[in-house]
Image 1 (cartoon, rainbow, N blue to C red):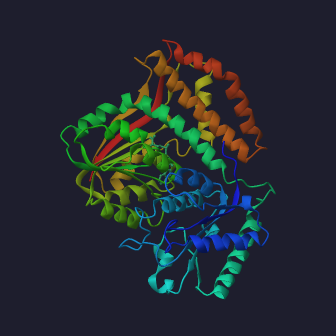
Image 2 (tube, rainbow, N blue to C red):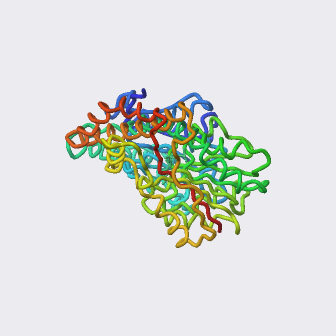
Image 3 (tube, rainbow, N blue to C red):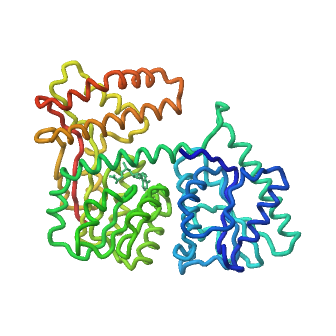
Amino acid sequence: MIRKNYKVFIAYHGTYSEKGSKQDAEDLRKYLLNHGFSESEIFFFPSKEGGAYKANVIDALSSQTFILVYNENLKLEDNGIIDHKEHYELCTEIDAFYALTQLGNDVGQNDAKALYVGNMDIHHRGDESLLHPLFKDIAQSATSKEDKETAFEGILKWINIRLSTQEKDDNNNQIRNIEFFDDNIEERRRLERQQKFLLKFDASTYDYHLKDMKNINILDLGCSNGRGVMERLGKREGLYNRLIGIDSSASSIDEARYYYDNKNISFYVVDVESEDFLPKMHGIMKQEGIDGFDFINCQSLLLHLKNPFNVLKSVRSLMNDGGIIFILDVDDGLTLAYPDNDHLISHLFDIDYQLPTTGNRHCGRTIPGLLSLAGYKNIVLEKAGINTCSLTHEERETLFRFNYDFIKAGLEKTIKKDPDNKEMQNHLKWVIKMGDEMEKRFYSDSFFFTYGDVIITAKK
Ligand SMILES: C[S@@+](CC[C@H](N)C(=O)[O-])C[C@H]1O[C@@H](n2cnc3c(N)ncnc32)[C@H](O)[C@@H]1O
């Protein structure tokens, strides 16, 4: 379990190059050490490059403020954003902290700042809007020693302001930034089990739509660690030219890249609901040499979105004519348990419905209408509900476990946030007490259960 909590993360570029910003970053670190900070409160990675980025991502996610120290040698792409290939580790750190700010947790975009050290007019170059959406605010400094001191003084003042508003929440509880990352690892493992199980349910629909396709471009929305899309589409030889996965979670993308990145497959940290979703996607498509996508894959994402209509509409604009969107999502209205006279199983799903962590559990029924409004055609409800008929013992176990564990974890998460919530505490006690009984029910041949997932396809 990761339990670091840095007050300041200092990022820089060009570790081994004299043209990089390492020296200025180091000077900033020394300045902070001379002004009340201890070594353990500042994350600064002075020597290693390459291979260290995974650890740095975790450190970025457990930092309260993020400072990028850079100069005019920071290599930018044609469209003005930081060159990802040139500065991979740096971009991963920035993306990680950015993802954290987008989650509406303890850290927001005001907790990040870029510090330019040099004589160029950055405002003229437009760095504020171009470098990365994380940096709304760039502090400029000049190369003279005095100017640098003034800039460092400004940064120190800013950090102290940020930390003093951030150390405690409204209830005077100590805030920790790390919670999301810990939770996410567990959540990713749960998803993997669910994904494996659903393969049997969704395979025939993929087979049907992909049978005549070759060399297409695929986009997976909300790809998590990539395992789901790789199992379904990634292994099909000759199917795709490019397969792109996007997710707002930097740690998931980090894992996806680690396992699957190759010349045809890439993963990017992208929030599909952010204001710059389309420009960011256009940048990625340009970089990847993609004019339009032929197949959009979207599993268990729409239920989590604030405005799925906007996302479906934007995504349609990235598709080639005749391109297909494949959506799998949930609708608990289709859940059915029989026999369940004592309402054991139906009560479990009632609790699920009340949880603030589970998204829109009635999302499935809204999707055909939203697709139509967003301009899609040939909308087909391919499947509605997955049931226990002909499932093996192991499959029944998985079906039970991913539902039960998900609800239990949701209750625990809710109680952690709201420790006085008696209703949720009672639910959790009940769920734990009845767990074995529920599990046994799933193993009985005479028990019939339908899980409310739907598969919907449509065309541009
Ligand atoms: C339930 S998981 C599904 C993951 C994967 N598609 C699967 O079926 O296993 C939802 C995923 O959507 C991602 N996600 C949630 N909101 C997002 C957003 N606004 N933009 C991009 N990804 C998002 C989450 O980080 C998570 O990985």
